[in-house]
Length: 257
Image (cartoon, rainbow, N blue to C red; front, side):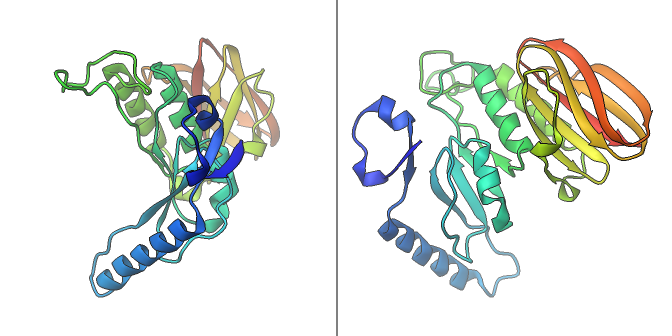
């Protein structure tokens, strides 16, 4: 990516999609002032609002986060944005999707990749809600996507993640090996492993598992159905888990019993 200041951008859409837009110092100073106003106004309240700030598009290490900021936002975020800013110890949010075509798979993949990279929130800009089709069934050329089917697929991801003790887990991409050409993300902790693999063909994953008994479940990201299960005793060390053959992507849940 070519990192530039917002006011330097021209009306060139191809160049825009290849650039990560960062706010100028004057803009950051203004946003810090507004965050301070909100924090000062609410400091005596028993419940206070979370304050989120959008820093740039795609990815990039944020230079500084104001103490009043609770959530770090990125538009059109790549999974790398999580790794680059995880050290701040704040929720990292994929704040807006879009500008990547109408295909459901594009946004399903983006959501899974970001969340299993350690992201905290996924916000989809759904273009299937339109004038005359307020029920969310519009399908027409647009800079983003959305459909009833895609919303159901997001529900599959939500229910998959809710099966884990997420506060005990952290991104552990380096644990994941031997994926047979699939790209992948992994959350791990407290004897739990959540894996997402994007690719085509026979999926597999290798994880360094401590000694114990485990249950592995391969999950269809479109329907939530379990495609394959395996229960095994493991002596400790790398464990190769062969999965199903898939057309686009698949999720894996491994839990120590």
